[in-house]
Image 1 (tube, rainbow, N blue to C red):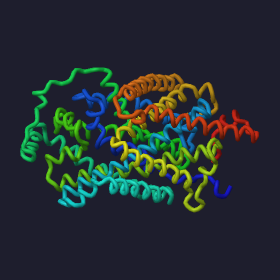
Image 2 (cartoon, rainbow, N blue to C red):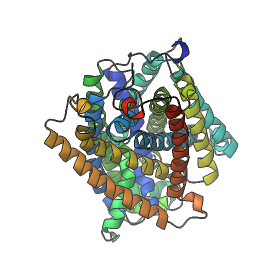
Image 3 (spheres, rainbow, N blue to C red):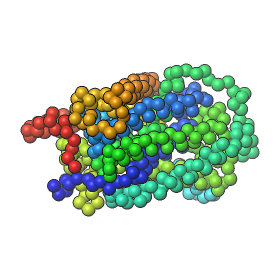
Image 4 (tube, one colour):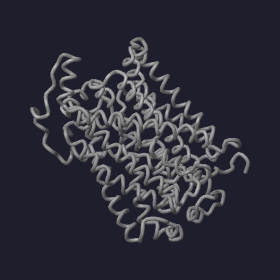
Length: 496
């Protein structure tokens, strides 16, 4: 088919696992557990319990993805799963939601990299460089440069992608481990003494501060945001068209990613809250942006501070190629199925990558960069991502429930999950918990006091879904007029 030829299966288990891990580790681990104190006032000392609670639906969603990936190992995993298990419309809406949320998130990540570079410059005494990185035009330009450099990496093919991503993943873990060790070496009294020595002030101790009362509404709102920390394993499923031995490697890579990252998240966050009083984090988060390296910088020599800030920057940068891999394969799958302009399924004849889909996704991420800058609060992008991914994961759990009745032939291909009853249990519990998270998250968003309606993520997300519906109806009409048997087309997997 010339330029419309298919992807090739070149990615091994390590590359798949790195795709999921690097999509999950980044801003979530270095920023969200601390800035959560601003986004969800009153969460106070309950961040770690909220993390553990958020892990439950994340694990259920990961199991749903693994089951579906073993049965339908194709590019654009979540789109293929829902379109074959539920309906083409729901498949497209779910994956368009995911594409939009993750593309905006890539912009947020790119935008957040620059403050970490600023902190590196400040730590080594480059005051002028640090000051210049505070300037809006410089920050936006650098963020755009990072995004498009990794777009070029993705364009050049899977082999270059793996050669860059895998070493950076190991470097990220090595530098992140410094934070864990340092956090458990010091305690809150050490931190109070360090703040007094450097800033000349005192901070209230945890013991002297009354903890806010536990409220389920606050706890669930925090858990819904922390759920975003576990988003990323879905990137593995999107690469299903390029995975070697996919029925084995896709579920295995998802398991490796969720277990590795979940454990690392909890250790990392526990280490920071062990060394830094939650009272200090809650107070400071109201007036300035906090990061894990910035907090530990009070306790560590400048050399170690530079190392952990660099580790945070690496973690953020790692998000970009992995997430771009995922969202571009969603677009490719739409075009390949004919429910999106077929040009987005164009494959580069030399590198075997979906070049139009990669460029379009990087373009949407660039919109996310500009949006983060002009909105002045990156949590808008995170809220959009959480809404999008909660909807997507919810539909994946529903797909596990419905596939045996809607497409028994594909359901029979599931290689993991045990009996039908066990799969129904995973799908049912996942559907219930994710529905609760979605309702809580949307309620919190709509009740928030903001300067303008477009700072609410829900109306923005609904507008995008309306656009997706119009696109779907237009392309569906074209297929029907061309005589395509729509029902039969979506009972089988895309050809390889």
